[in-house]
Amino acid sequence: MRAFAGNQAGAYRPEDIVAATYRFASGVYGSGAWCYAADFDEEYNEIIGATGRIRFSTSQPVPIRILRGDAVEELPVGDPEHVHQPLIQTIVDELNGQRQVPEHGRVRCAHRARDGRDPRRISRTVLLRDHARQGRLAAIA
Figure 1 (tube, rainbow, N blue to C red):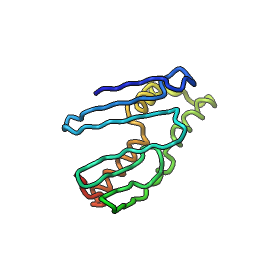
Figure 2: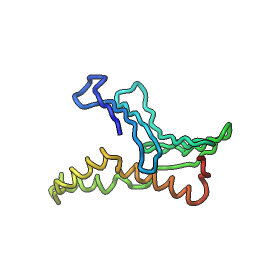
Figure 3: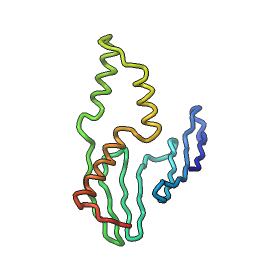
């Protein structure tokens, strides 16, 4: 893996742009660019194969798009219900003095968000996998 991070906008101290290239154990190559100071809000993942592409979002409830030549198929995807409610309830309970959130939980949540195991990303990955198992995503490789 090779990655670069920097602060291009200078609006705050942390990095606001990251670019990376990587190779999975299977031999598949990937790359990504994340800019948190762009002039527009667009986020998607795209898997490119020999006969088509699959485009999907990890953070927005937009359809999964399967593109083969000029043909485009869209599979609707919505946000799971109540996905944030347990976390919000935990915070509210702590603010009301009803319980204290363990410190390691906060660190673990931040780590998961940083390394890609964010629950929203996982739920979209599971949806994509389930669609594939049901035969709704034909192989594009």
